[in-house]
Length: 330
Image (cartoon, rainbow, N blue to C red; front, side, top):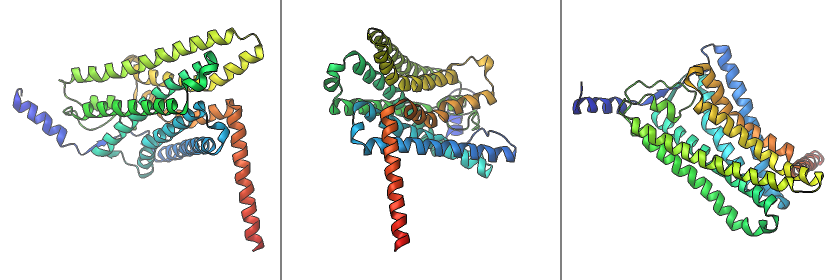
């Protein structure tokens, strides 16, 4: 069947979809419950770690600097990221279901694309922050004042919003005629595109080119920034000064490596090594693990942040003890 009638049939198939079926991690009930508890642990770790970083930076006046302002934004994005994919997957495992509504799937795709693009843009901005701090320390306050930091963070969030809007609008404007089963534990653009009809190559290419251009541009900027940083650090005469300069860059470099490395492997791996089980593992490493690991990386490598966290926790426990003692005496 060809011509207008076939097109109307394809559009009808697309419009009749009210829900999608997500790929379960396993069909065994015991393993489903194990998956639920594992994801719950990762989710709680991410919420606790990022929540502590946000609270500490907001509470400690000494951390009201450009680097920590960007770190606070990164923690907010990580909180959003872990909240986008994990809760629905946990609920499906707990209740032994696979479905997600059409609107819920669209919301997941928009949120995941928004948070991923915004985080990539913010990591690029953070590389510029490290470049200015090490290569142009005398101009740090001028180039990265409070207004400039707000503008840069807003640009990162706006980039994420625009990218997500384009991806979501293009993805869900395609006619879907290959069922509603997704080969992933959450909704993402490549899986929806696999359900689209055959006459959608130009839109697929447009989505791919947009994502590659954004990713490549950010990657080039980060690499160039760190090349300049390395050259500046090697010119520092003392070994202690070199170590101190490197230590301020290592957390950011580690987060960038995890984020870009897992993302590239997830979306650019050869089809010959692709399999449903491998795709699930890579997706977890790309979308679930980084939000839980990032706070640990920064808190372990940043002495100022560690000291502020200790002071915050000490103050919290002191107030808790005072409150409990007052209750007991009353």
